Length: 114
Length: 112
Image (cartoon, rainbow over all chains, first blue to last red; front, side, top):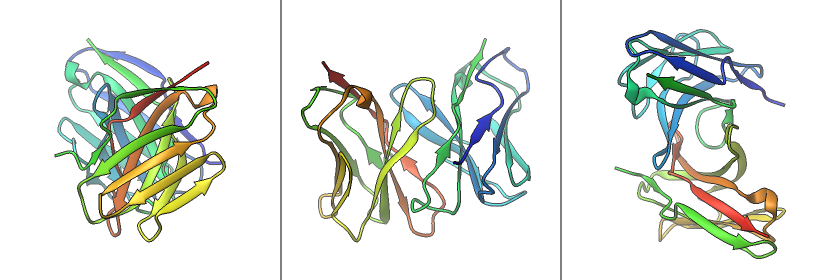
């Protein structure tokens, strides 16, 4: 069974801090994704990666960057956290690209920026 | 511009009855559609999917119907059970595109 592990369930950070959200998957999946979930807005794609050191912008990349140095690990970085980045962050992985290979999600990190 | 729309934020259904969750899409390039279920404090889990070459896919109590001409799909849950209370996300993708686009979700309440 695929396991996607997000390092923190809850984080509280101050405005302007640099924040790292870590995600690890154990099934040798090619693709990894970062989404954020907000009430009334659903799941919005921030960044995704289809290979080590490769990344693509999603729909809302502003204020974020990512790092994928190893296949199993995909990090989301908030360079200078702002209050509008308070959200639930969800990491996911999939075997291949596209919908035919369903996403496997972690349990999420709820980030509060004060 | 929202490409995947779930126009009902919430839905309440009596236990044992049929739950019908609806989803509309605007991008005619979408050719694969998925439904995910999400409980509070957990990540979404994959429920069922359908390719655009089919108009129906069934898995136990869950059936997804696709109407390509109307750009509409629906998820039917029969019979509805208390454990079905969750948020349901409709999602879509296009061949050759790595992205999966999600709707805003519908919260389903199963009433005892």
